[in-house]
Length: 260
Image: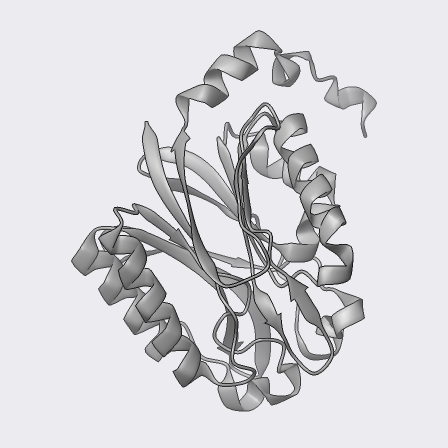
């Protein structure tokens, strides 16, 4: 099974969902014109880190952002994913949503590890469930930014046979070397594809590093963006995962009784 992915490495208008929807729609339509089957948007692409205004700009899962994504996915038979500011009553979450090619919301993963350096814990609540879902009948998983620093959480997502890890992020430029090294490590140790979308641009407190990337299950970089806005394309052949897992059977050789 081969999947053409498009990673939308975009700038984000701080606290302006309407403008961000407009720009994301344009990028999604470009990706569709270029044959993309799965389209990945960055972390909090509707709002950026305007956390103190989430009571004004966060949405429920029935809001205009979700209507747009569902319509674009269903009318073009593509899968679209990215994280948004979610409101549930008086609670707020950084939530990765996945719309399948029928326009159905098939996964809502709330970021498990809140990043103190960007004050997430002051405004958001953490999620407590995994981000596993299926894409074109292939088991995969999705996580958000800081989560990748927790290898045990990534391994937990891989134990059901997941063949790819999707990552959405607003990763700052000063630590972009960590971003690349962590993602390559996650691919090697889990023998899976890593498909990671980072934003570019800046807000009042941060400059973001770009370098969205696709890594294969051997740890080879298949495609990588620079530090400007662009759409990064890559063909992902899920059969590569099986071949590498047979060559070095790490999942069969695990000894989980020693790890507790």
